[in-house]
Structure formats: structure tokens, C-alpha cells
Length: 283
View (cartoon, rainbow, N blue to C red):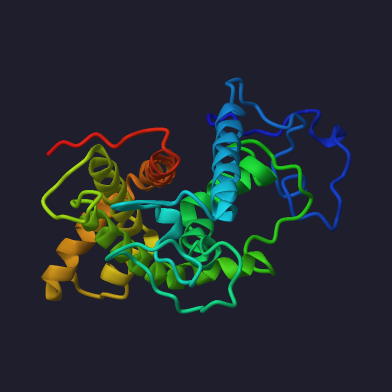
């Protein structure tokens, strides 16, 4: 055969596959004894992904439970916005919404982070990233995973990934609030308008990346252009679907860029609040 897929003479020498197995070692798959035929450093990508995500998890956990140094007029950390408890720092004109009253004694960040965190955890790209990076399912393209069975996202708890579309709506609301926080960044420490500091630029870059990542979501693309039989009858939605499609092509890049920018925005506020750094004023 010209394709080179003819059976190997020793194909029958491999031990018979487990009848209950649904992985790559079944009798219906190619009889290849080697775990993979890749000669490149395929493990670098999943290893780097795991390290990057782990670093963000450690940092965000520390900042979320710290319950301190998250506000320095006029900037508020995106980890704490909106602030939904009474134990929040007073933010004049900021997102102080004491909906949970005085009974909430933990960090107010724990009340709001569930929404952007849920959106990212169920994101199609992040699923691929941490499935490969932490669970080796699969570790890389053309590399057999170590698990004997594969059920996909059809069973608990992974079937809960289907709530991604609902977290998308929450992510839109959070992005809208963070946009207002960015507008408030055009004030000085005395809350006077018409000023701009380095922090304003940090927050501008952050909110642009957050909106780009949110709108590049596969759920957003489906909401705008899905279930349409004739694009010609919906020219506006078709054009919007095309725009979102362009963003969707860079979904992975935007996922990482926005993850880094939100951490940097929080860290910038932390430096200001602790007196480590003074916000340079541009005008």
C-alpha cells in the first residue's frame, strides 16, 4: 500500500487488549507498541501550561484570602470588584455594594471571584489546557494518555462544564463593572476628574484584554451567529459573527494575556496600597 499503513509482521505479538478498555490500546486501534512516535520535546507545552496555571492559582488564592491592600484611590483590584460585603474598604464612587451585610466575615473577593473563575474554568481553551497540563488527558497530540478509559464530559463532575454559556453572561456583567472601575481611574487621589496615571494605563490594557477574551469565547460566537439558517437574511449578525470569529482565532493568546493582565492590575494596586510604589501621574 502506498500509504504505508499495511499491517506489521509482528503486529500480533503485542498482548491482547483489555476487553473493558476504551482507550488507545483496544483491538480496533493501530498495533503500535511505542507510547508515541514523536521525537520533539512535546512535554514542554503541557509542562509550561501547568506551571503557568499553577502560578496564577497560588497568586490569586493568596490575594483573594488576604482581604487587604486591594484599594488605593482611585484604583480597585479586579479581584475585589464589585465588593459585595460590608467589610469592604470604602471606595468613593466605586463598586461598594454591601448586599451580604455584616454577617460575611471572610474576604469579599470570595463572593465575586466565583464568576470570572467559573467562566475560565469552563472555557473551551482552559479545559484543553488543564486537561493536558494536570491530568495528561491527553498529554499532547499523538501521545497516548495513561488512562485506561475515557468518558469525556458525559459524567459528573465534568458534565458541569456545560454551564459555560451561563458563566458567559456573568462574565459580561463583571466585565461591565470592571469597565466602570477603569473609567474611575481617570481621577486623582482626591477623586477629582480629568487626571491620568500609570495605573490608568494598566487598567485600560487590562479591560481591553478582558473584553477581547470574553467576546472571543465560543459561546459568544454561537450566541451571535448560531442557529441561523441563512446568513443573508441576518447581515448584521453575520458581520458581528465574523468579527467574533476573528477574535476566536486568537482565543488562546487572549486567554493567557488577560489572565496575566488581571494579575498585574491586582499586583499594581497592591504595590500602591502597601506604599511600595507611587503611581506616576501623566496629567
